[in-house]
Image (tube, rainbow over all chains, first blue to last red; front, side):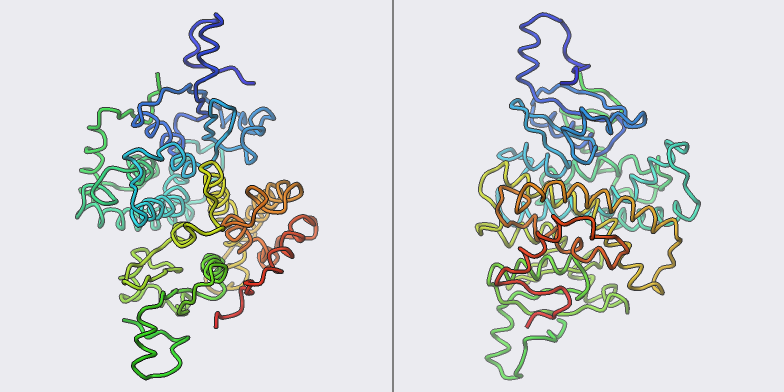
Amino acid sequence: MPRCVRSEGGSGWPERLEAARMWTLYDFLESGNGYKVRLTLRELGRPFIYREVDILRGESREPWFLEKSLVGQIPVLELDDGTCLSESTAILFHIAEGSPLLPVGQLSRTRVLQWMCFEQTHVDGVISRARFRRLHPEAIPTRPEEFEAWWAQGTQALSVLSERLSRHDYLVDDQFSLADIALYAYVHRAGEGGLDLAAFPALRAWFARIQARPAYLPIDQTPA
Amino acid sequence: MPRCVRSEGGSGWPERLEAARMWTLYDFLESGNGYKVRLTLRELGRPFIYREVDILRGESREPWFLEKSLVGQIPVLELDDGTCLSESTAILFHIAEGSPLLPVGQLSRTRVLQWMCFEQTHVDGVISRARFRRLHPEAIPTRPEEFEAWWAQGTQALSVLSERLSRHDYLVDDQFSLADIALYAYVHRAGEGGLDLAAFPALRAWFARIQARPAYLPIDQTPA
């Protein structure tokens, strides 16, 4: 069982017992997928232990972590009974059930999932990749044509999103939901991937609405 | 409104009225994502109109189709009231609600979604890409290193899946579910992408179990 590096202030028994009952998020600070879970937990008012996994150093391929995630991928949310959940979309649906972040109506829930799947293919697979390669050029060599393809596809994804958000405050039913959290995570940092957000005022207005929420936490701030 | 090319046998009014009340699937026969929806509709015993969209000829970028899918992407399922659903994972969750394909328990549902998200990133984004590029070498030029990366990542995904299916008949709760449909779609055709399935007997046994189901339809057979 890995040591929980945050939130385990003391070494005394009562604190450990408390920690053992809490959920633990295995995460990497700059990951947008991890950030989706952080933001959702904050919105739900659910305290959790934050455990950084150094994916650049290969920690997510270590045996102790592969026991929690078959694919060796953060984020993993470990529930109080030891159940480990993977895949940010699945984690978000699991923990937001019954909260205002996940609507009740069937078609609304389908629309939330639809946007989250759109994100997985057209944002996470594209913008997030360009961002990672630019932030860590030494990790994987990247050819200029690869960036150009990501910028073209990423700009198309931003256009689809902007078209929607120029007519609505939030993505589904004009209510803040998991869909907004999932899309916001990588889109608000698209500039780090080399994409230009200046042409998308509707996106920047939507960023501001999300950043004004009381539970908001920036992506680069470790949860307390 | 596009003409429905299949299932609209006669030109008389009653048949047209019947067609107007049916669901229409906009699809491309060789697409594994479309095939997921076809298999699910067959399992549910739900008749539907099959409308082929020639994505190679650019039909999915035509204005009539962009009205149904913002991203110009098949599959799209048009419900009888004109509502259009995109993203195969969201479509499957929508139509299978209340059926044995989608378990009732919250953790089981989360596991189904988790496998479907795993598929989207590690199979659809990898094996399906290698398959498309090999089936249509003229569509997008591909460098040998790209195939090598897909084969390495794809083989890792097959290993994860095989590890699970060597211990269980189906992916979640030992019951056939949306997770099996979603993974089967591209995995059983991984050979067309240049991946070797010979090393994975557990996968081939799972293929046989799925192919033995009464509602089964091969990917290359247009729904009647």
